[in-house]
Image (cartoon, rainbow, N blue to C red; front, side):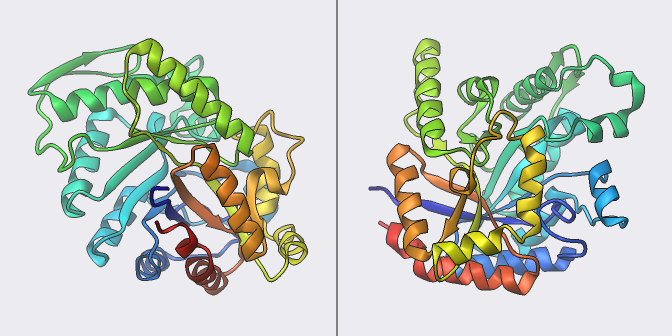
Length: 340
């Protein structure tokens, strides 16, 4: 078995969602990433939000701190040596692809080629509408993502280039320097069939969220079938789902405490967005929750289904010190079992 990789989701845009308000400062994000590198994790993944969701305002009555992920990852890159700096997920419809190409390439240079970009349409349509107003009525964010991805590949590969789509247009743009990595890895987020097709069309990795084992297995089969149809070799594809994580002495204790976290509350809200259609799934279908041995067993099940990276693991705690303690426990008791 090849080495299985493990990544930590850092709270760049998670207050009021996965974590309470307040939870982590900008400098805390850098510190968490440094600790993750010291503990032996392979990557850290920053999330992307720009404005507070209505249900978060209603619950907390105070504003969360949403830090810009690429800027935060630049600070992390300077403060670390080895660990990959990644996004889970960078919301493509928030940005123009010319600026995305420039900023991501810059981060790749700052980090000496350690960037992974996970991207998607974003979990909350209201954010997109709030930042753009009525002019985007009728826009299809999936189509915007497709154009964004095509434009990124063009900008990073070509000489002065032009692009004309429904949502984005640019002429005679020379985006230089190119990224250090060739190609710079792009992971496609999302649990939908269209997301799996985008993996073949544009991606180097698949980054779904909180899927049960059999859906991961069937999703990989679907990606392989489409790749065969398109004539693309995906033998090096990284299957990198995200999971909530809670490890305790016993499975019963872990499940009880997980239900008390802000992360569990948030997972309920996601059943109307990211996890739509998965309403009947229980804790063990969407999370790595249990004793050390139980979590190892669950990881083995996913590895057998084809998972190669456990990306952006979200440690389900309500304070940063608790998060660091659980990261340490996971690093000491679980990761070595998969370090082949």
